[in-house]
Image (cartoon, rainbow, N blue to C red; front, side, top):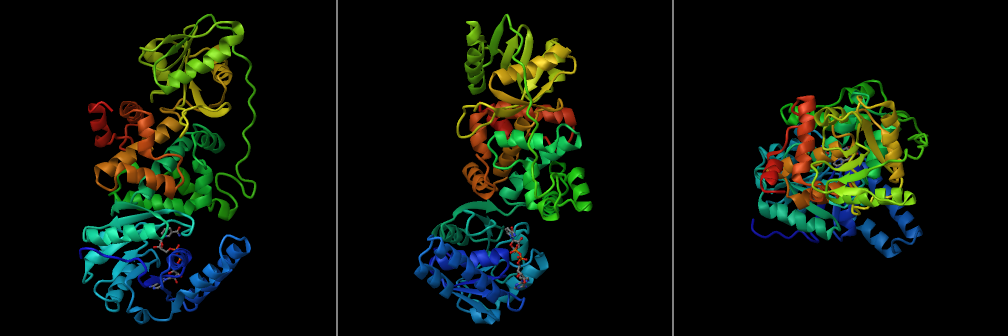
Length: 512
Ligand code: NAI
């Protein structure tokens, strides 16, 4: 195959469930004649009837012209047998997630459709290479991974297996664009892009919960303050712990039980106990109430200081300078600046309030020979570097510190305009550790040719609504800074989870 054009071609969608119905709708709205087939009797007709109701609703709201709705619906034809779809130029299968059943369907399809017909699979976890094995024309099989709900979610992962013809992947890429989607090329590897890079978002919070570092609502608040639309706990509750645990397990197994992806005991317990999240009325939170409000903490003004110095350089140091200048203004003086320091933070009469570099407060305290040490989390806000007043931020105080400093550290953070949230003295606190791990996973995906950095960024923003992609975060941070956090985590936990991606190490060598 050299050039392949699928725009306007007849499409067969197999499987009229949640995804198949959505795919049929999107294809029909883009002007394709769509046949819809499901082995469950009446399922295709039901899906069409449901779509009619949805389209009527859009017409009633003035979001769709009545003619367009009617035309879309008229383009969808439920069919009772695959043999009726001989003319299809593209088949998208969205049937049950089972290798053998999908293989059986694909083989059957090869006996029906023409030789040039492209076969696309919406599988979310099965290897496209494995699905193609045994086909007469394995080069025509490609992954076309939509996200739920299909009409609303922009991302399509165009997944190539070992056999997939580049022209076929390209044709699906172009077709996805014509369907109003944003396609991203991916190599068929466990989890493809999104389901792989997203793992640490859940895993780091679950790891913190396992060691009782903070309650779920505190971890959620920290990550939401960093720009995530939902905290990991409320998101897992929404997805369903059974589903989320199954995806984690599948990525773990498919990677030969690489400890990097090891599932969490916390989540397994919840699944076994039937605490599945919203759908069962209880997960991390109870429903319908949802996430409880955090208790409002009142911080007294910090004690009057004699000397305040801002250490370090970069956006966080700049922000600290501006915020501490403002905080000290009523006393008629401002902070000194020590831009050349090897740490970032505030030094207040010898006590140190440091931006986390991955090491625990206890460790920094020992390394510096200073008892009064506290660490605060990385304020990651995107696209604005500006840290909004009242931003929730995790902090931890060294156990060596005096009771006075235990109270003064959060008082200073509050005086800088933040809403400080205490967490256990865990390496990399909450946001720094999570974002570093998302970057690390993205880096490994790029290293292994799964996707490009731009592809990873687009996929995470469009597939799971992240405020930024891993490589955009990296640009705002530094490879050396990310590696430092990962190494601190690795040194602390001594496991495979936190091993640094060679891609990141190379960035550091290259001066990134
Ligand atoms: P679903 O259970 O809602 O629908 C599957 C449909 O396929 C059912 O109507 C079933 O009767 C039909 N079916 C089963 N075997 C068949 C066969 N041999 N021939 C024809 N029809 C058959 O499942 P859903 O959620 O729509 O998922 C479908 C596929 O899409 C799976 O591969 C899944 O992993 C993938 N996917 C699902 C997402 C989701 O959020 N639900 C997101 C992205 C991909």
